[in-house]
Image (cartoon, rainbow, N blue to C red; front, side, top):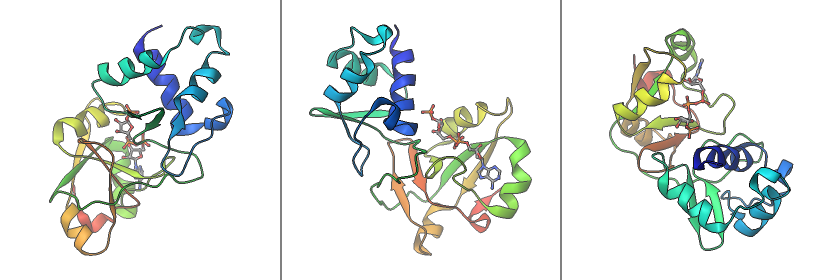
Length: 178
Ligand code: HQG
């Protein structure tokens, strides 16, 4: 097992399908580490899983996807289940970015940025991060500039994911530079 494989499955459980693992997830996305380990251990692949593996998984990852606090773990962003995870509202920086595929531009110009399958729209704090995000869908991703502070002063809420990832419910096209 690699930390990358572990991270993928933990993300799946915490972002998309806690019920498949019989995990109780609270409003802020926290799950008991003990419960998660017990549930993963029913799969031979994770029978040896220990808390330290989860700590190492978080520490060794380039992206800060998960957070551990005491005996709990949560995903910091990416959720898709129906019960919306409550995120911390925060004043955004002046500008945020969004890396996307060329084929989505026409639709984004009309509809703005929508959360699609996730609970929130995901925005990047810098262009390098946005390029990485966009490359998942297009070899030559398009980087959109979002006038976050302007949107915020007009009532759009922003939420903190981690140093690189910001969240919003919806970003109207008028705040986006194409
Ligand atoms: C697009 C990964 C058409 C949007 C990443 C995106 C990120 C529209 C796609 C995190 C649209 C949704 C999230 C509209 C938005 N019309 N397309 N109106 N509005 N879209 O994966 O932001 O590695 O749900 O541009 O790195 O790509 O998993 O969101 O292309 O941080 O930790 O709809 O997931 O992180 O795609 O990525 P996604 P995302 P991890």
